[in-house]
Length: 115
Image 1 (cartoon, rainbow, N blue to C red):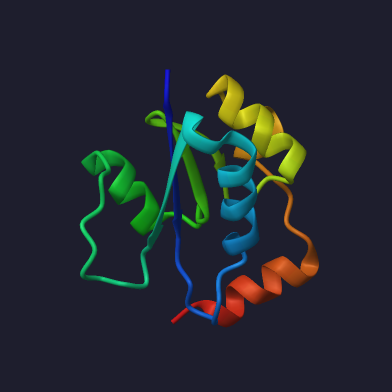
Image 2 (tube, rainbow, N blue to C red):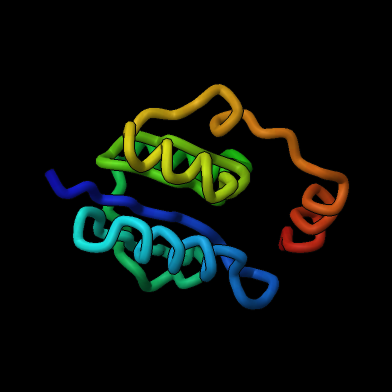
């Protein structure tokens, strides 16, 4: 069964960190997985999200958000490549992928990007 992977992010500070991540997933899974990226900095894109998840994205600091077949599997930080393979394969989150700790540099970068 083909999986759908969606990455929601907001590239407010230049090129996204997700480019290599998405390329890796596409190479690793090939035709088994459809990977789509949605940049929330572009306000003209239609987002394939249920209203409660869209509201969550707008109110919480949960981006980037990785969704596999409609299930949120990672938030606030892109998983490492090994963990990403597991998240996509199982379609289930891990405790560290839903509540990751951010480094001081990542936290500072987020503050710099806030409007």
